[in-house]
Image (cartoon, rainbow, N blue to C red; front, side, top):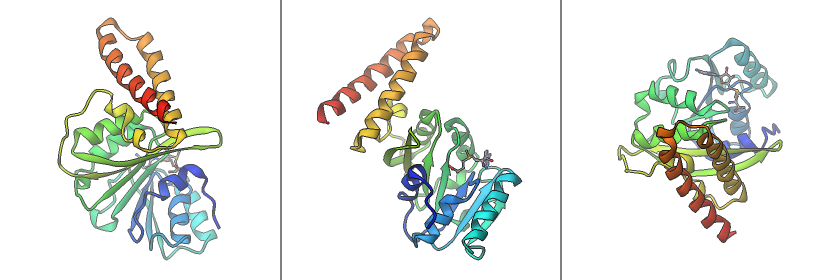
Length: 227
Ligand SMILES: C[S@@+](CC[C@H](N)C(=O)[O-])C[C@H]1O[C@@H](n2cnc3c(N)ncnc32)[C@H](O)[C@@H]1O
C-alpha cells in the first residue's frame, strides 16, 4: 500500500468519501492514488502545470494499475478542468499566494456542492484571507508534522456569506478549534514569523501588525491554558 506521509494523509482525510477528486499540482499523484487504493474515492483527475511532474504521476498510476481510474491532465490551475468533472478539489504543497491566485481564476468554485481541500506550504494567511473575503467558510483545519516540519490543512466550502472578521482571522483560521498540539505549534510559528515582519515593517504598518499580534497572542494563551 502506498504511504503518502502524514501531510498528504491529513489532506486525504478531508476528502469526502465517494467524491470525484481533482488534485491540482499533483506532481507524483500520491494523493489521488492513495485515495483510490484505500477505497475513499472512485476516480480522480491528476493535474499539473508541467509535463515533468505529470510523468511522475504517470509512473505512480501505472505502478498501481490505476490507468482506468486516474486521468492525467496538463492544466494551469483549474483552467482545463470542467466543473462537472469533480466534487472535491485538492491543492497541496504550493505557496498560499499562488493558491489564492488560482482559486480567484475559477469563479465556478463558488458552488456550495464543491469542497476545497487546501494545504498551503507558506503564507496560509493569503489563502484564508481569500476564502473569507470571497464567501467561503473554513469548515475545519488540521495540523501535523511530517519529516520534522509543521503543516496545516483546511477544508472549505462556498456559502456566499461574507462574515466580517478580525484582521487576525486569516492568520488563525480554524486552527484554534483543531485541538491538536501541532495546531498550537503552528500558531506559535505564525506568531514568530509575524513578530519578525513587525520588527521590520514601515511605521505606517506598525499598528496593524500590533493588532494582529495581540489577537494571535490571546488565542495562543487561551489554547496553552487548555493544554
Ligand atoms: C511541491 S509540488 C506538490 C505536489 C503534491 N501536491 C504534494 O503536495 O506533495 C507542487 C506542484 O504544483 C505544480 N504547480 C505549480 N504551479 C501550478 C499551476 N499554476 N497549476 C498547476 N500545477 C502547478 C508544480 O508543477 C508541482 O508539481
